[in-house]
Amino acid sequence: MIGIDTIIQGVLLGGLYALFASGLSLIFGIMRLVNLAHGDLIVFAGYLILVGVSVFGLNPFLSALIAAPLMFGVGWVLQLAVLNRVLGHNILPPLLVTFGLSVILQNLLLETFSADSQRIPVGVLETASVDIGVTSLGLLPLLTFGSAIAVILILNWIFYRTALGRAFRAVSDDPTTASLMGIKPNRIFALATGLALVIVTIAALYLGMRANFDPTTGPARLLYAFEAVIIGGLGNLWGTLIGGMIIGVSQTVGAALNPEWQILAGHVAFLIVLLIRPRGLMPKQ
Amino acid sequence: MTHNARIEIATRSSRVFLVFAFAAIIAAVFLPAFVSRGIIKDMFAILTLLALAQCWNLLAGYGGLVSVGQQAFVGLGAYTLFAVVGLYGFDPLLSILMGGVVALLFAIPFAFFLFRLDGAYFAIGSWVLAEVARLSVAQWKAVGGGTGTSLPRDTVRSMPGTDWVRALFDVSGSAARDIILYWIALILAVALMTAIYVLMRRRIGLGLTAVKDNAEAARSVGINASAIKWMTYLISAFGAGMVGALIFLQTARISPGAAFSVTDWTAFVIFVVVIGGIGTLEGPILGVIVFFVLQNFLADFGSWYLVALGAAGIVVMIFAPQGLWGLLRDRLGLTLFPLRRRVIFTSERTDL
Image 1 (cartoon, each protein chain N blue to C red):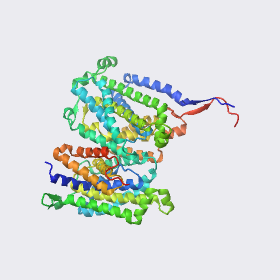
Image 2: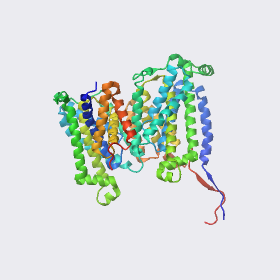
Image 3: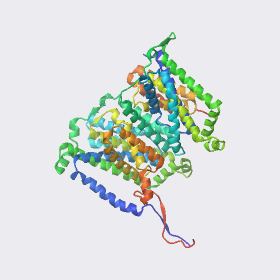
Image 4: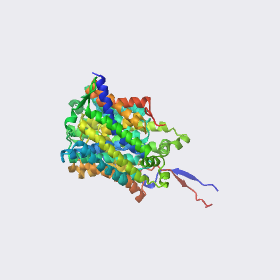
């Protein structure tokens, strides 16, 4: 039965997808690089948090707080050592390199953690809920959605109010001219990827607390993130949140009709938007 | 002072290679008389992978359309075969062709969506469509839904030509089937490569190269860039559909996960083309050979094999973007399938 409850669940799920999408969007916006390993990096961060929780007995949020700078380092090194070498007008090298990275990550995780599906244990938070009259909302989905809004606010603040954001925008518009002004584009790109992987860690925390994951679940997260970005319109983070909500609601409504239709319904919604509004709902002018 | 000149594509090495290639094809036809069934099965895998690699190479290497969704057409072709053979009792060999046709028909709406997405987004968009195809096929209960199905035993047994091959080579029925499927794989791989080569040597191939290098400039000199993109996409879908049908006719067992596997039908294919040399016809051949050598050496290491393959792909893309064939070509000055047009002066210029 599709009720108000189904819709609200979908909207909150959209927050998770917006978290998946923000990192992807950040990297694409600054260096025109589509990272095909994005989903696998989310899963990788999920395992990192899980190690903190199950091996060292940390609280999941504390574990994510420790994982975040590690992931920043991973992004920094990845960008300087690999991705900066393949940036350029030809789209083929970055796509193939990140696709290779995706395959490497998946199989490394498979060798290390086996194919068993895992979940980050969260204790009472898993079932805690807030009653809002018409329905009761899970505290965890609410927290996810709130984090998505916070991440978007912070990203927009960094982008438009700080020196780092100015550098991001400068290298995005014209790296050559930016470097004349004393900005080192490769350093800025490394910072951007590092920052994107911090967001990936936040996404991984909520993914891992909400649902089971295993080494092969990355590509599906990449697809949801991508769909949210395209539906929203490139370069518009609030649009991305709307995009995530559309995918989320389509999935929960699809699942309410037939559990097997959940994922399919999200993809179909994306295709319909693409058909009607090829540049997304809120394209940046 | 006038000069006589002509345009030539063939080189000395390519003329020698043409003779060699004919000999190799003839030898491949008679191979089943001399080698074991295991080798014929390996050759089947090599040839089908080569055919898929050439399809992807046409799309990405020549057309600049980097797809991560070719598994859609492999799966659709394979499921077409299972539907028409399993449900309606069609001739299995004819059904391979139908697999290609159905993949082609699906490629038309796919292209309509995908050509709205630019460059890199085309890649992920193609992946989404492949997922949609997989999830939709999993809803199709007549072919086993999410768990899949097998081909009826007697349709596999009664494949045309089986008795003739049995008598000819004095082998068992199942070995005879492997030989027939190997021959079909050989025909498919050779036909696809010939078709792509002929296409690339014609005006349209020149147009394709121009569009890939600079779509705006190509349009400005009167090349119909959109028509060329459509054609590339549809041909590679048709090819992948037929190969998919053939592969799953051999396994005789299908499931959505296997038929639409991104690892098997796209990741391997991409690594084969990239490691061998993207944008050349020689590259995928070399890539397939390297792939199978690696596979035999690393067979005991499980998924480490895929880690090594991914790493090899990245290293090649960064340090030798032209692939192994590009390195060889530069060292040896060889071209087996030349596409470059050269002006040959037939009388000496004296005014220089």
